[in-house]
Length: 320
Image (cartoon, rainbow, N blue to C red):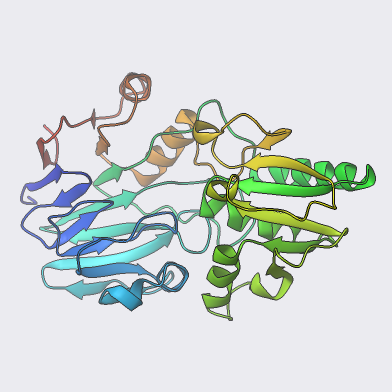
């Protein structure tokens, strides 16, 4: 019988008796970067990430970074056995499968079941327990290909009326999807410097975006401008041109004052999360404390063994 394993939530999950932590946990000596929107730790420590995420976030510049990729055998790190699987959220996002004390524990901070616009399709690992470190989207978002069609149609109509489309993205994952959606559409893509430099750092063997993304200061009438949402008040567009602005990203952070919006770069809703959990065959599901009660009740009603920890609270796996 496998030994019991303890986890705790302290600004992020941490696997006790090991150096491994997740999200914004400040106690862990090894922090897993699960996607490109995760903030780097302020204090020096070791990081675990995909090559794509490490390059995009310049992780190796400030931290000792262990790079892992998909479709590789599990590696041993002390008592831990670690392996990455695509989450469907883009090339930098992954599900981490941890072997520890005879248990298989999966960690995910976002999943997408439909075919992505960039990167590999989701590969769902089998596990004994799973940590779900995200809040499901509500209501159900569009599939990536549907969202792409809506975005491209809006851009065509906007340019047909003599305006330059400007897309402000709520997350880097959304910006990545927007650039992937538009790179073969015949539009001249202009990105904010932060996004431009991020794409240039990415391994050129990937489906490179940087070849079709130029700096936004070189704007012409055939351009489509892609910006981070935080640039909305700071970035000055040339005044002699006319614009229409759209928001692209999760509904949960939609500012609501743009001409239109597109739900791009979002995770699955509750139904999609349940489908994913069933395919993992996990006997124990741990939700993050910020997850809503409706999701907890929905999964319990579906017959899953689910817990949502208090702050802070140790959880013993497997759950009784």
